[in-house]
Image 1 (cartoon, rainbow, N blue to C red):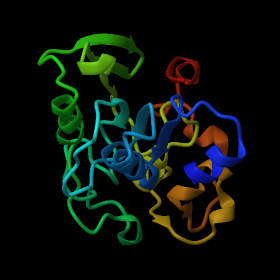
Image 2: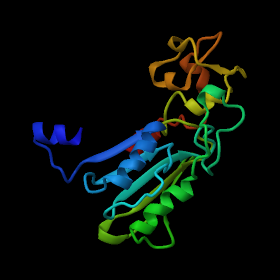
Image 3: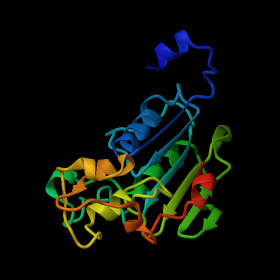
Length: 212
């Protein structure tokens, strides 16, 4: 894809960035591990490193966003929690945020101590800098956040946990959910209204601008 874009459009190849959530988060980590020569920096959200031997060919900056209560890709690693429906579970244990980022801290020759660079509402970011070749590694934790974009209005984690009236998520009736929430599945017998999630963790819309 990069080859196609670079050959057909006038882009700065030194300013290509990769980001993604969930499976896209796994992809983002993999690109950082295997294609660090093609991207300037990476921003995985709610993912972890699944590459057996992650060895970037150069130092690469990385910032990750992860909810501490993510039920699908647990913050501290391991399998999805028991209350997540079988169809949505990871089949294997996944590495923790600490392990995934440690690979880049080592690769980038970062200092052992981090500095708090952001603290607002339920989100805290710590940054390891300066690292080799001007790189840095950032870890942003959303306290109580689920499997969703930070600041997202329809937290996938909350839906899969069944907090909406305690109803279990089913993989059918996806049309009941707003588009941005459909990846989490839909409730089997009820429609999810936007107001149903008011006040849930991760709904601070002011974070959207801060996290860009």
